[in-house]
Amino acid sequence: MTPRHLATVMAPLLLTACVSSGPPSQSGIRVGDATLAQFKAGVTTESWLFAVLGHPTSSSPVEGVSNTTVHKYVSGESASGLGSLFTGNASKNTAIVFFIVTDGIVTRFWADRAVERDALGKPVETPAAEKQK
Image (cartoon, rainbow, N blue to C red):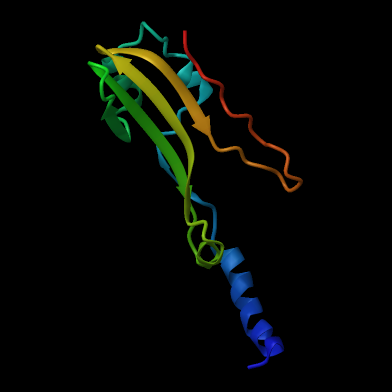
């Protein structure tokens, strides 16, 4: 098959992939700035954190620091269809919110968010800064 014939066969498939992929689906817990503003370092309890956000995506004790745990809330999006197959972008994390809890009290927290860019490469959303007291 010549390159021209291959392009003729592949063009409709690529067009179909772009059209049929649809909007990405969301997963995890999206924690916005308004929600983060409800928490206060040194004041908010772990039970309050769980009451507001539910259980975290993952939790890890901090080795060598007694009674300290890192809770992570991860949100992401996944694409479907042939477009994701060709681009390799089937899923990605869009945000991770970290909470450091010591002796049942939130001591620090912050959000790391993916920065989306427009067609010209300019950031669409500015990532949230570290939030702590």
